[in-house]
Picture (cartoon, rainbow, N blue to C red):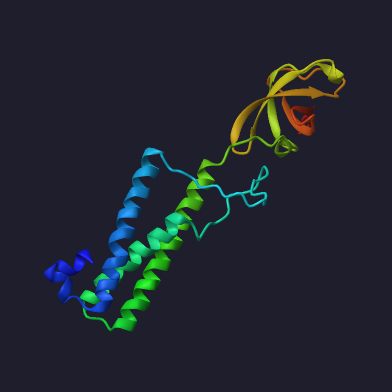
Length: 197
């Protein structure tokens, strides 16, 4: 082995040698993963399993504890913490236990980080049904009895939206009037009524 020719290598006990053998390649691989992730050259391996893994609208990204990045992060933290605990003279069993715990903690931290980052990156797709019952303001006059379409402004899913609207009211609903959303038609047009309150 290449490392056996170094005089320092001969002074290490077997456990420290194992930790170095784990630490060096995993650290290099982790740095490569980190750089490729930062520059956007991440390659995602897709395996044909026949299992539908697509997410429907509204589904969230699952918490992925076992992923390539997390496993590599485990070995990096396992190795470096093991070397640190070994250098301060802890017993071998305690060094192994603590380094495994540090590795698992790193895996959990990485999985949590990527989970919450993926939640931030989820699309802000508007679900029109969330507008039902909301109050808003007429932006463009809405003709009476579905004779035409107007526009309303209301807050849906945390952001102000301007959406097409129609009404069944006997009179047109003029600009700046307060409305309430009654229903959604064809998943794109709001059915509104004048708010009587």
